[in-house]
Amino acid sequence: MSEVAYRSGGPQDRPDGQSEERNSQDQGASYSNVMAYTSQVLGLIEKEELSKEDSEWIKFETVNGYKEHVNPGYLFSRKTVDMNKELAFVEWKDARNSFIDIDGNEYIDCIGGRGIYNVGHRHPKVLQTVMNQLQKQAMHTHDLLDPYRAILAKTLAEITPGDLKYVFFTNSGGEAVESAIKLARKATNRHTFISTTAGYHGVSLGSLAATGKAFYRKPFLPFAQNFRHALFGDVDMLYKLLKSLEIVGEEAAGVIIEPIQGNAGVRMPPDNYLQEVRQLCDEFGALLILDEVQTGMGRTGKMFYAEHENVTPDILCLAKALGGGIMPMGAIVASEKVYESFMEEPYRHEHTFGGNTLACVAAIATIHVLIEERLPERAAVIGEYMLKELRAIAARYPKLVQEIRGKGLFIGVEFFDSVVGFEVSKGLFDNKILVEGTVGDVKTFRIEPPLTIEQEQVDRVIQTFDLVLSQVQRKYNFIK
Ligand SMILES: *Cc1c(COP(=O)(O)O)cnc(C)c1O
Image (cartoon, rainbow, N blue to C red; front, side, top):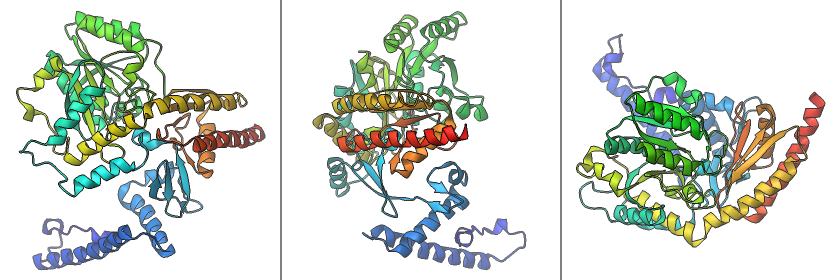
């Protein structure tokens, strides 16, 4: 069906020399297919309740659409699709801390959108704010001054550490990192950077150069943006890189750090790491860029990870939870001294949708909710409880679990091998708990729920973790 629907049919594509008229008829036919298809879908979106027939149709269209038009690779790498049994779990709606699939199964969300749902799913205050704004205006003029950009910037300046003051808005974390790179280059007149091994900063070409994993980088080397990588946590190596760059006349413009390495499996920094990095940056005149795209907005028990170490970066990168899990939103916040270099020509670096009206009001409401509901504190308390309970359970399965670590509600569970990790994450899924981890890459999985997760849900996760480990242990003993 879709083959017909989306055939382009331009005359230049037709070596058989079909007439112009025939082509426009084809286009008419395919447009009418698209009209029928999209009307059906718009009708489904409007519906409160789906019929059995509706949900079967959607499941078929979803699997088929992934196979034919998205990327079939996803179907073989997710625990939510079982190709043999032809089972597919398709998301449909959500509740505060959970997702409900199209068949009505409800899952406790311990992925938290990889860090976007800090205030919970569709927090009523954030949702209402965005809906109120939608009644007035959705996007900005690009000409008149937009009030919420100014108001959100002032609010961010207020809550971020030290003298961070000027804000530039993006649509994503990768764009925030790109912006930090450009700002640091402009502010220092230098162009070489240092990041750390295994860090994750995004996949756009500039941010990818900063990212520290071969998996993401290797197929796309070399990069125009020049990055060296120090081993994460190794202050001595960072010193040596800064020093050698100075000797060869390529002084570092900046050092970018992901304070807890999320994508790498919640790898924790050594004590006082950021303080020592801050000192080195000052010594060599390099800017300290903190990538708090995932650790920010309360995740680790403080509004920003930098507060744990009392460190002020020169540039702070934010995204993910900033838009409250309702609007995509990113930002960099910089000190006045650093931002000065962007002031003379503001139009030289900006994004069409960056700081759009809906995203700004969503972020204002999100910050309000984080403070009102004391969610950073909540992350600290519940995180500590979870860490303690999960570790007590893991101690009873010393052959399976290697280490459990984390801070706040940012927890990594590391197994001795990724087969066991997958078994456990699949077992949790079968018991309706979502944790981050896909086929073949689950040596460590992340537990990163909304900071609004209820005590009762936390206890269910803990009990189920125990149950699943006992099942996997039995299977593992049997295989051995
Ligand atoms: C997710 C993430 C990014 C990239 O953000 P995108 O919105 O996916 O571009 C950058 N840095 C960190 C630390 C992240 O976790």
